[in-house]
Structure formats: structure tokens, C-alpha cells
Image (cartoon, rainbow, N blue to C red):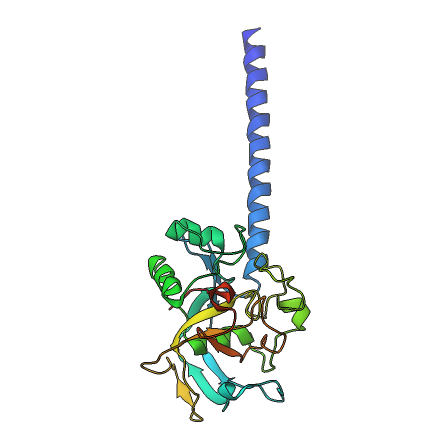
Length: 260
């Protein structure tokens, strides 16, 4: 009798072990599939300080400024010029969310509230301080445009309504990140939702080819890139530039971080 009971007990333990292994296999298979889907655009990683995912951008050369055949360019997007980035870098797959900002800073300055909405009402100094705290930095203007283009040469990496929140489709508010189509590098919301602070002082472009440019050494205004919920379709272009002077002010401005 005891032997039979032991055999039944061992049988149940064996069944439980097999069931546990099957569950683990299913979980890891799901995680592996998800990782492959995300990594299909390139190498990514999560920053443990803010919990956001970052995309690796390879070095390369591109034409910065007004895109060929773009009739909507403003004067400060000209002249277009060759830029070479000699080092790869990481950049946020999305703008910094309110959940991430609150986690790191302990406050949320935004007008429109939601954990997965981009943080806004941030000054350039706020954005730099956040990136410093998560062991990163603001991207240079050249890095931002190179990442935004996603390897394409046109003024946008897709039809405006598919890739950006701007004043015709945003209903006068921000929207959760990563709801629109990403570019070929797997980066979301580059041309709409919020304008994004970059590291550079605002200044005119030169015509000469540049290597790893960082903008003027001094200035009065900082550069914001990409359009926002407030801006027209005309602004939602990869070469569009703005500053912290005029417009809708901080409610339009968010940011994403970068790192070497």
C-alpha cells in the first residue's frame, strides 16, 4: 500500500514538473518572439534608470537640412549640407513619457496627464537635467535629424497622418507614445506629438560638409526639432527647426535622450 502511494505521489510530482516546464517554455518562447519583433528594426536596450527602450543608430553620412524637392522648407533649414557621424549612438525609441519622468524626477509638469503621454511643459534645462540623471544626454541636432530620417532622403518617412500627431489630427492635445508608424530605424513620434529639445544652440547652417557637428559654441536660444500636436503639417518634416522663443511654448516641448 505504501509503495503504491509513493508511486502515485511521484507520478503527480512528475506531472507537475512537466507542466511547469511547459509553462516556462511557453513564457520564454513568447518573450523571445517579442524580442525578435522589437529587434527587427535594430539593436535595442532598456535603460534601468527610467525603464525606457533605446535604439542603436549606426554611424553614417546624410544630407542635413532641406530635403530634395521639399517646397515647404524655411530659410533656417538651408543650405542643405553633408554631415558625417563617425560614431554610433543610442536614442530613445519614444519621447520621454510622463511615467518615466515622474519615476526619475518625482514630479510631472505636464498639462495633459497620462502615464504613457509624452512629458511636456519642460524647459531645455529640465530636459538636460533628466538625461543627466539617467546617465545619458540630449542628442545633437545632427544626431536627431539622422535618426528621424531613418535612412530616407525625403521630407517625411511616411504619410503625415500615419506617422505624426499634428494640429489636423491631434484634437489639441498630446497622445500616447508609439501609436503612430515608426520609421525604418524603429523610432516613434519624431515628427509630431511634442517638439523635442536637442543639445545645440540655435544658429544658421553653413554649406560646408561637417563631421560630428555640435552647433554654435554659444547662443541665446536652444533648438527644438520635429512638430507637435499644436503645429501644422508643414512643420512635421525631418528638417524642420524651432526654438524656445515664440509659438505655444513649453506645452509643445518634450524630449528624448541619447548616449554614445
